[in-house]
Length: 91
View 1 (cartoon, rainbow, N blue to C red):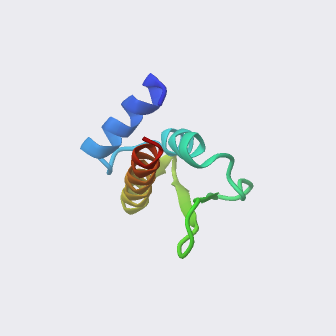
View 2: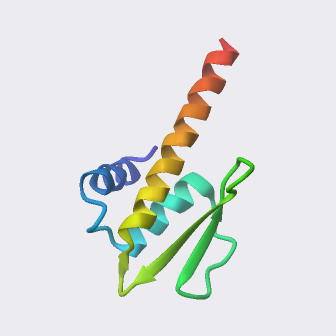
View 3: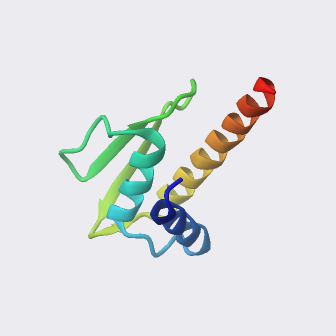
């Protein structure tokens, strides 16, 4: 993870109510790649697992919605657990 993304994620965890939409987009693009939809106030990112395979975020006057920040953090945690399990299986 780049230092800039790590700092944004740290701020998101401390205060999910005060996250800019552009910062949330940057984090999502780092973890999930380019959004499938970008032209409206929403951006939709694909996740690698089945069941709930997307992250949907919305621009609210330049800010990210706190509940969507929480959903992104939960997805990041899930990815990190899965990646950690893959690393352990490779050993």
